[in-house]
Amino acid sequence: MGLGNMGGRVAKRLMEQGHEVGIYDTDAAAVARFVELGATGYQNLKALGAEHPFVITVLPNGDIVKKVVFGEQGLAAGMREGSTLIDMTSSVPAITTEVGQALSKQGIHLLDAPVSGGVKKAETGQLTIMVGGDAAVLADADAILRDVGEHVIHVGDLGAGHTVKALNNLITATTLAITSEAMALGVKMGVDAQKMLDVINVGSGKSVSSEMKFPQQVMSRKFDVGFTVGLMCKDVGIALDMAHQAGVPTFVSSAAYELWKFGVAKGCGAMDHTAIALVVEEMAGVEIKG
Image (cartoon, rainbow, N blue to C red; front, side, top):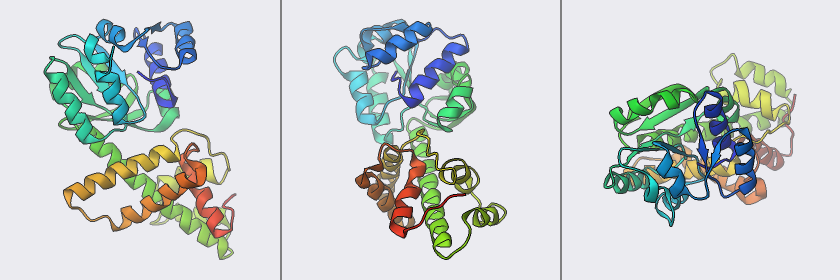
């Protein structure tokens, strides 16, 4: 499965909802913690796949998904015909299609089901899950997904879930970037940051970034790690690759991507994605705080 920030919380939520959960992770200490909570630990992915009709992967990227599925002692070696792999990784649609086609030859189903909402909503089962794949396969997995997601939306064929996730994060990344720049400029011009934010949040510039992320993370200076700068940069890159392949213009997206790449190059990759505001602050020579 993968027991990182999101995967661990998804596993814990499923256990709390009464599911029998089997786990595997390269981090033996993480596995031990979940075994203490009642999960069943496995020595390899093949063994896990052989015992569970539904397997969820929450991994850093699509290349790792391929290794987990098709590597030595991987999931594909153990999963039975008729079982379903639910990939919640933020991945590349082309990789998803490739993996799905290969698994289908073994009679194994694949749903790409990336999520939005962050670690807090993962803990409370309030994630938004965007699902790509066969509707009948989704119907069989629906009860599991609804125990971790408040909104489970079938967005299309296999790969559509990962497409929508990348594009949703493209919008989020761009909105957070421009809000950071506007707020930094306002402070530089002598405007009180909180008063400027108050105006934005009752005006046409309002967004999730201004309503939630700035008050909760930036203005408070918390920057609690949930979804990192590095992961956001990865997803923006996926979206831009799709755009280039499809021949869609990316004037605004490409500019935003440069900031996120700069943030990673500055050493902020492991910080929460809201820390992109710190990168803007440093360049502007100001601090955006309440």
